[in-house]
Length: 434
Ligand code: UGA
Image (tube, rainbow, N blue to C red; front, side, top):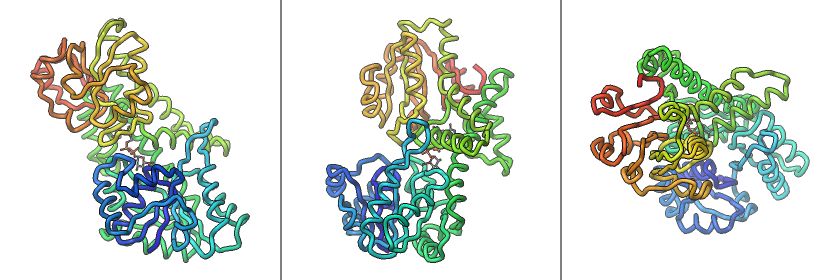
């Protein structure tokens, strides 16, 4: 099939590349000429494990190309994906100007039937708004389809190539058939392509992310309570997760969820509920608890040092909001840094991927180390904010030698409690005994 993908951000690039991988001809469009030129030269603008191999292979084999010319890209395309940003506007609601603007640009030049797919996470009713733009600007027949993405950063290629499900919100039979054909190679294992109406599809995306954010937040609260009652949240997690109705995944407590999706989507769903005069109480609590969870570890640190952090020096392992990404949007580490620096502490951080991004945002507010152990040199304690694999099995002797004191505040429960006790560390983690 011939496909056009408008927008080469994270979602657009993963979608375009993975669609090319199964033999489709994909043209990706972006308005930033410099970015397009770089992609033509084989330079991938984002970090995503495994994507570069597919990216380069499909460019080399002529199935994946890039342009700034919208007309050229859509001319032969049967399906056009809109993978454009929907940033929160001043009022917290998703700003649809990029999506609707691109729809208008396409409507003004489209010559024959196309399926227009909204891939970005958009509020319920957006597909109807896009349809309206086409009705107002062209007589050419198009179908507008909602096809939300369920890609996790860091494992996006796997999520795209082997999805648990593909959700397609489409009313027209012709559009359903084309979308079914396009996704058939990705669901050979038997996972479903679920067809529904556009509004249900848009809601599915928000409901999925909000449910997962709620699940994590619930476990964070259980962890907080475990600390008070003397239970071990790791045991509780395994105990409840073994119930198939609950499930093992997304039950890991920590320092709050971050990233570009959960915080934005939970807020957007709560706000759209408000628009319909519905008070979505759970989501409000989720946002509230998550905000506190991000800096709860700072309270623990303050408690340990009897509220006086002035002149204290902390090593911080992990800046990205989660492993396998350089993304720092809503990263708990940034909130922790903010609180600690405000309290007069000095920080030396190490992250395998995210340092450049952090430096761009907070500059030299903290120091950056080239490797995890250099970060520890002379530090009063280590704080762990991201569960990079590299931190899971450290050289504890080297850790001890570099740190000024054997003190670890672990926001991701990386180590066995007993082991840390045996090694003589003061080890303060989440939802477990100190
Ligand atoms: C999330 C969803 O998982 C994807 O399905 C969805 O497509 C994507 O948002 C999106 O809307 O684009 P992502 O934000 O990449 O993906 O990251 P996740 O792996 O879901 O993690 C989100 C946050 O939850 C991270 O801060 C992570 O540390 C935290 N988390 C996750 C926990 O604290 N505990 C867990 O058990 C799992």
